Length: 220
Image 1 (cartoon, rainbow, N blue to C red):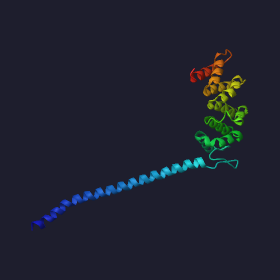
Image 2: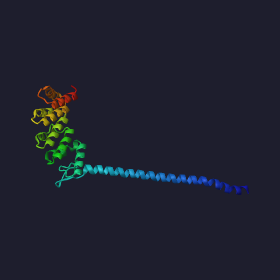
Image 3: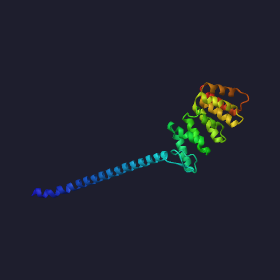
Image 4: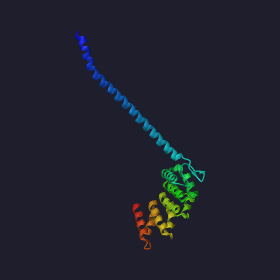
C-alpha cells in the first residue's frame, strides 16, 4: 500500500526533472540549428566574396566593344570601370606585365595608360623596356609624369641614366619629378646627380629640397 501511495509522489518529483531535461534538449537543438545556420551563412558569404573576387579579376571588360584582358579597362567609361582598372593595377603581379604594357602603349585614355605605367614601375618593368621608356616624351602630362616616377621605382642604374637629362629639363615640374625619382632609384649614379643638384647655386629651393631628401634616403 505504501508503494502504491509513494508512486504518485515519485511522479510529481520526476515531472520537474523531465521538464528541465526537455527544455535543455530543446535549447541544445535550437543552438545547434542556429550554429548550423551561422556556419551555412558564413559559407555562403565566403562563397559570395570569393565569387566577387574572381569576377573582378576575370571580368571581361569591354573598351569600344573590344575585349580587354581581365578588369584592365583601356577606355574607362564610368566610375565602375575606373574602380576595376585601379584595383587591377594595384594588385597586378609579374604575370600581368604584358597586359599592362599593352594598355600603357596603346590606350587612348591617359588615365588608363598612366595607371598601367605606374603598375609597371612597381613591378620594375619600365627601365629596360625601350617602348615604355618612350612614354617619357608622351604629350599627355599624366602619362609622362607616371613614367618618370615609374623609372624611380626601377631602382637600377639604367633608370638613373634615363632620368639624368630630365633634371635639366626646361619644364620645372619635370625637373622636380626627375629629382624625386632619382632619390627613389638610388645607386651611385643617382647620388652623384643629386649631389650636383643640391650643390648647384642655380637650383631652385624645391629642387634642392628634393635632392637633399633623396640623398638622405639613399644613406648619405
